[in-house]
Length: 235
Length: 185
Image 1: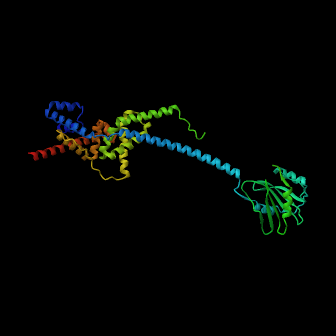
Image 2 (image 1 turned 135 degrees about the vertical axis):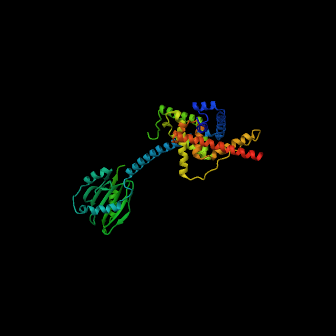
Image 3 (image 1 turned 90 degrees about the horizontal axis):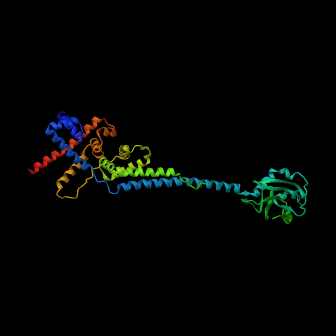
């Protein structure tokens, strides 16, 4: 092993186990001396490289890991809790909406719309008996206790999903349309209403609204009084 | 129902406990040398500790991929070197001066301590390409082949760098010695 190779080897790896290196060092004391010095230098480098580790570092590493793990578990919990909560909210909301139906229904507006829509009801004369009217009313638990005069027309109709009774009744001043609409959440009524052709009155009874609609000049009060006193609802 | 968390099976618990144990063993066995290596890589104690924290957190996350405990050292070194590189991607740091590990005790071994301090400074002043293989050899006891593998270099290159590293330190020490001799004489 020549000088250069020897020097390169002992400085690249002072603890080399190379047989040729040992052989060369065995023959030449100067080289053995140089090798010894290289080993001493390496010891000092090792000591210098071995810097002090900050105190408590292992504990900090373990702590940080367990905190991270804890946070992740919490996040996982939040995630499932959030899902469950929104599911419950969704069920709750749809239940409430399903129960309520449309938000608010203006009955008087509906009454007018109905009359225009079913104009034939004011033309026909089906001459309906009180018994027939009461048969229909029975489905709301209602009944006319005495004759209410001539009934031209009687049929079920729907006030925004609420099954109601549509009557056309005779009065001294001509035909009057009467709606009997069972009470339901979200209904809105006006005591008196009118448009350019009709005028109407609403009477809130115990279980239903009584809506009367007639021509502008008609007196509705007498009929209203008559119906009110004769209409009974079984509890 | 929805609010009740399914209690994890016993085997999952056992796996977690096992993972925790492996991790603690890894930390206890290697955090010192990994920290030292980080210190010589970045030259700053606080930054070194930060990088070691990041390294071990990443190690925890992918601990399942570490199958052979014997490979743990080189696995951690790889993560550490990547963390260090990432630090430079994030922000171009001003080159930090190596912290001085000043030695308070100035007893009879004062000379010896001064010399150790000198060597510390000389290691710190080596170019990174010389310092890194030297530290792998000195701190972790890596062979030339292992260093070559870790740094993805060829073995001859590694041996040359190791030689140059020690040679530079030796020559610097010798010239300092001569200067002192001249002043004293």
